[in-house]
Length: 161
Image (cartoon, rainbow, N blue to C red; front, side, top):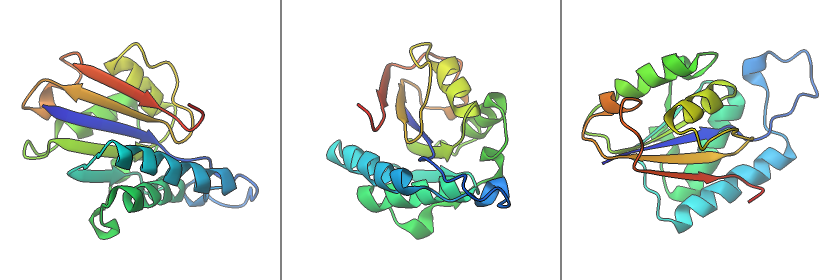
């Protein structure tokens, strides 16, 4: 079984138009929602083998805040440029290339590509608002099968639920 978590970054601050997109921080709501989602994951005893995040500050901060709640070491979070300003197809290529020794992987990134990917994996997912988490369980031994086989289970959660 392979379990993929897609996590859209928490709400970001757009108050400073001079900041490059990659450098936008979380706003107050984002700083509340990310730990809230992390606590929900911790209650379900979610223990990923790998946290992989976009280099954008808002995604990295979201990953760090959730990592704290699920007891994942910050130093073990992997920043991957391929998760920033990519496409659903590019994200799927990253997933399919994951080491087969990993069974539970959590990706942190952006819309529209995360919603596009989630919808491509399960038509149940129509939108991923900020801080949304979608869990996909695939009955397979190979990440290369993701997107070729339907998920055995899909769990969607977001702060407003």
